[in-house]
Length: 336
Image 1 (cartoon, helix red, strand yellow):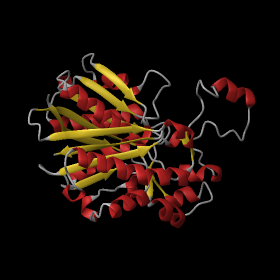
Image 2: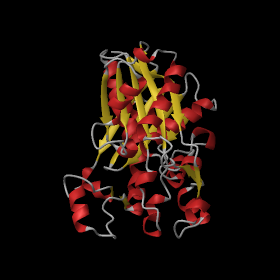
Image 3: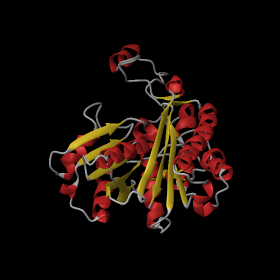
Image 4: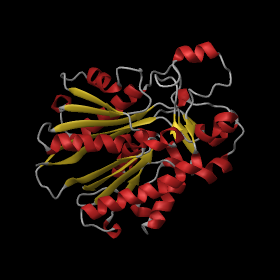
């Protein structure tokens, strides 16, 4: 069995910066309120008409990752794309990446695991490489949230949190089993599915025809819903559990962690986890202050920035961890 390792990273965010003060002009909120609860100072939003979509942002991030990996685009054997905001209801963006990168007809798979999407996608890629089926797998996390948020006072509890952007990684074969991805750990608890969800349009409860027929100006079914405090309480428990699970699997301790890259859901969650594991500021990488919560894109954007800043070096123990809608959560333990 092979190991897999990350050999290239890239990220892309739209140019348009939206500050908390900008949001206060659209809804009843303010900079202090947002920062106190989330740690977010600003985020990026795609400007309508500028051509950015979930797919195009993913492709831009992928091109950087491919170049840094030092491989040709036609060396890619498989594509995995994690998002909750696809360009189309179907097909998913994975095949659009194959088209836009103009590569041979490799397989493409979409992962719908929201905030845990990139961790799940890395785990899937890892299995393909471990078994020898594929050598180079492109993994993308990309989101365009802003066009689908309720940018009024009614929706402020959710809308102030999310931002747009994309990150990508190239995973490749590693023959030294002490290097690369050591293990991945995935969990779900579907009984809480509707605590963080977007119900419509969907085939289960409300389709577009139902929304049109009701013609209800107060309809919130096609905006994301989040039971914030309930999500927070579950997140801090599950984050801790899944990090410990990963460390124990590899006979490691929290003191062995060189860098923890948590999903950027809320700075308060990251700080809680940092305190619990007694990690220094240098051992945890956060960038939610600049980008908000970019869901499936948050870990690859953060990991790329950490690498660019020289915080990820050969031999380092890097831990990725996520929790989100589903509920789903997971971790990745990497020896860089």
